[in-house]
Image (cartoon, rainbow, N blue to C red; front, side, top):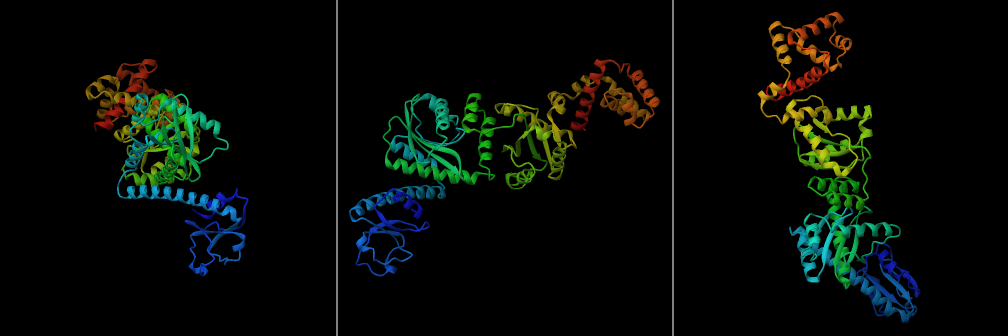
Length: 491
C-alpha cells in the first residue's frame, strides 16, 4: 500500500498528532515503536511505526514512516491499518496468482470457473455495451440467462436494469465494489468498474440469489477488474478506448447479434454514430497482414481523419464514415490519393442512418471491393450505387446467356468496327455517357457536330433502332455494362 492510500485511511482519525508518511512510501507492515530499537538503519522502510507522545523523541529519519497519536488510540489504529494491509495483501496475492496462471498459458477462465463454483456465484466481465468478455460456469439456473450468455450477452432485462442504474448514478458514482439488487430478476450482484486510461470501459459482476457476499469477494472482484483493465489496454489498437468498444459492437453485429440485443447494447454503451453514414471497406491489393493494418495503414488514415469507428475484419479495414466527409471534394481527393499511394481499393456503401443496419451496408461495400478485382477497375474508390448493376449481372453465371441479354446492336457495332476500322461502338458509348446530348458528345469526341450526326444516323441504320426511344436507351446503357463485365471477367 502506498503512502497516499495509508494517509487516506487515516484522514478521519482526529487522535493523530504527527504523521510522517511520504506519498511514494511503500507500507507493507505496521508495528509499535519499541524504545529499545537500535539505530534508524535497523528499522524497516516498509513498516509504519506507531508511537504515543511520550515516545515522540525517537529518531525521525527520512526513510522511516511513523505517526504519533494518543496512547489509548494506538491499538485501534494498529488494528485498522493491519486489516487494510492484510486485505490488500490478499488481493495482491490473487492478482499475482492470476498473472502467474496467464503467463503459464492458463486462461483466466479457469480461475473464474473455480471461484464461481466454490462460492456460488455467476461471474461476468462486460464492456459498457453489455458484451461478455468472460464469464464463469455454471451460469445462473435460468434458461433465458443461459441462452443470452451462450450468445455472448447478459440477460436483456438485467442489462436494462444496469443501464437505468448507470443513468441515475452517473453523477457522483463510486468505483468501490458495491452490492446492488435487481428487483425484476430477484438477483443481488456485486459490481466493480473497469477503467483504462481513466476512462470507464466496463464492469465485473458477481451475481447470486442472496446478498451474503464475503470480504474476499470484494478483493477478488477488484483483482479481476485490474486484470481486465490490463487486457483491454493491451488489446487497444488506438489511444482512444472508444475505438475498442466500437470494434466490439461492429464485430458482434457482423456475427449475427439480434436487433433487440444490438439496440440494448448501443443504448447501454452510450456510443454515438454519425447521423448520415456509409460503410467503407479498405482492402490492399496484396494482403500484408493484420500488423500492417494496425500499425501502418490505420495510423496513416487517422492522421487526416482522426475519429471514426473501425474494425479489422476479413483481411480488411472497415470504417464508418460520416457522409459529410465524403461530400467534401478536397477530402475525397486526399482519400483517393491515399488509396493509390497505399495500393488500396475502397468500397463505399449507400447512405444509411441506423447503426443496427451496419451488416447490410457492410455487404454492399464488401461486394464492390470483390467486384473491383474482377473488373480491374482503375478507380480506387468505388461507390456501391455506381456498380450495383454489375453485381446484378454477376449472378448470371452463363456467359452466353449474358450475351443474349445484351442488346444485339452492340455486337453489330463491334463487328462493323473490326471490319471497317471504324469507331461506332465507342461513339455510341460516349453519346450515352453524355446523357444523349449530341453537342456534348461531339465536343467530347472532338468531332464536328455534322460528323457526329452522320455517325449517329449510321448507328441507327446499321442496328435498326431509334436513339430517341427511351426503352432503347435504357437497354443500350445496361448492355454496355454487360459488355464491360464480360470483357473484364472473361478476357
